[in-house]
Image (cartoon, rainbow, N blue to C red; front, top):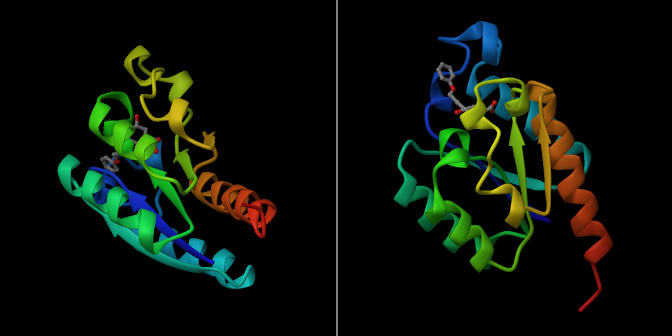
Length: 149
Ligand code: CA2
């Protein structure tokens, strides 16, 4: 089983700024934690981070033929991007949306996600655990689909 993890804009700054909101772990430390869970589940994970909407759209489109599922933190594009949402809606593989922070406990513009209606599941508010829980959820979806047409 192969899963692509996509990190949206500014997540490359994790652990370097805004630590009170997003924590002290860097993106590569979070990726290592994801990798550990993936290994324990015998799943292969690849990682991709971009600050560019179009690049993320292309990566989502390409992933449809290369991966079994996507774990994505769309970051600010969550609340703005019809393009990311349409890309997710256009592919066959399941997509799980995750957020470090509780997007419903913050500014009102973060309450709306363009992505959630087309995601297979959503996890938010658990810091780096959101990614790990999201990965486990995605693996569970994929395992229950195995062998089904
Ligand atoms: O809580 C999350 O994971 C978010 O997706 C993070 C996004 C934010 O726009 C979403 O509303 C919620 C922001 C990611 C920016 O990350 C930074 C990390 C360090 C310093 C500055 C930004």
